[in-house]
Image (tube, rainbow, N blue to C red):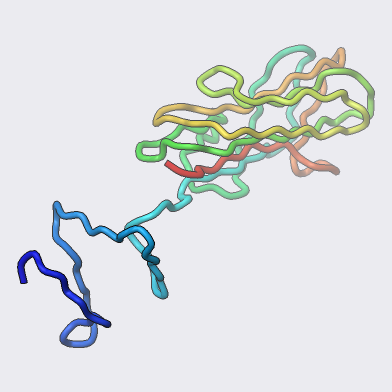
Length: 189
């Protein structure tokens, strides 16, 4: 039938199993406004799949010098399906994975002292995109997150800064309290 309308209740293969193809290469299959598509099987080959995610923490406490931005050695995966470099503590957006990302960082400082300025930050291509500054009062934890657009080749790095007046440890999971970690996941293209 050429340029006609096919009206049926059910379409199946002649054998009762196999593949049914609608359209061919170069054509567009249109579902008109007001129609509902119901899927009772497995949907493959269309739609968005959250296929890029990571969360890394430090394998051990890391000493940060006073008033010096330091890259945080987050090199141990909690969960990951990504392009995170554990030797350089850096996530780089791989080919085909550009889009909107939700990224965040958490920090925990090994000190019972009170002082200003314990900061965690994520840098994108060398520039801070999100940070959080807290007043340290007895083993504080700080956290921040942001929704950002990342292009292929963009990179993220975790940083910390403390102003205790001396050296201060950034905690690892092996410590007695919460830990520092960096995370991210792609929300859509």
